[in-house]
Length: 361
Image (tube, rainbow, N blue to C red; front, side, top):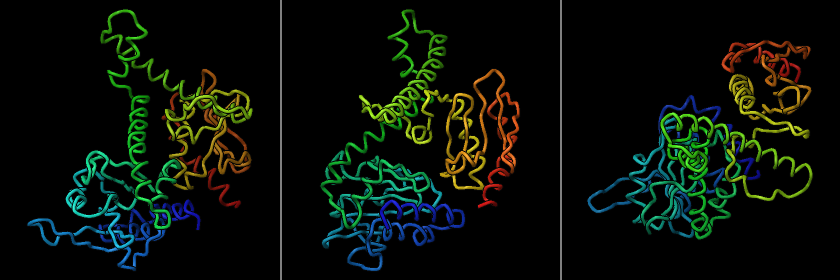
């Protein structure tokens, strides 16, 4: 199988079995060993490649074990510490990795709960594991940008120098993206003051900060939409996009927005409505099958990105908002709503619409 396909197989397995896993040992058996074998390509049954319960004595500490050590060319390259699926992963869970990292030849360590994988190296100080990962992957929400970097860790492509050289950029770009996402959605005082001080001539009082906090969020949302629409128009026209603005686009929004070819502006309110509908119907259908298309008259939500499988329509470009629901004959009924939260009141109807298409399949 292709690498991406192997990742998707693991993702499906985690989604199917995570709720039934009760222990750390079960997590190792069900998720971590298959990840090492299927995704990374190491033979978990060959002790010259993968050593479970690897013992590494340090000073007076004897007999402590790392869950897995991966070897290549007879030397340890990767150390793996596992926690039970569902447990949060933080720096306190990596104490053994910290202790053993500097006394082995490993340059890469992994902290995982079977769903989340955090990859560390020694960028900050030689032979001392960094406190922050240079790469993270969530098998239930795979970021396509990390796939090429993860592939460098596979047995067939493993090149520690290439990995370390890329790790610094990955680490800081990832942190910058997460910080930008946080500031765009919930700007702190320093972020608001940065813009307000360059625009507003008066004193930056508490009232001014509150006003500019709302304006900053609104401007950030419009900026993201403008960048996405520019990229889409560039793709449609075949003219290269002139700036590298994709580095500041919230990747989740960028992947989910598909504007029509007629300069339609997708609003944040429409996107929020889409994600509410998606959250409702994902209990009965794979979330990846839910797509949307915006038009001048409505915002359409579709199954399999197919116009013949409409799930709902958001009629938000008017003073009275409507949610359009479809029956088994694909007839639309518009329901007036006053807030996005009211969409949840139509959960049963939205799921029924999905069931109609699945019964016809």
